Length: 31
Image 1 (tube, rainbow, N blue to C red):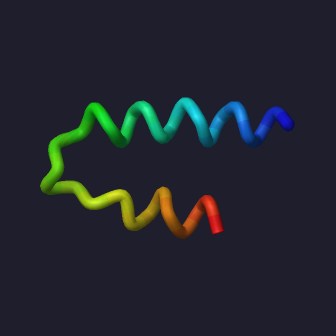
Image 2 (cartoon, one colour):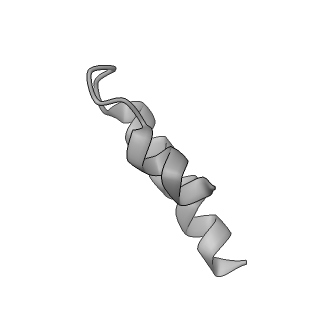
């Protein structure tokens, strides 16, 4: 459960990043 919370925070961080950086690494982490 704690890991899920961390992923949620990372998603927000990636949303703040410019669209140039595609959430490829985050998608791999989710899988």
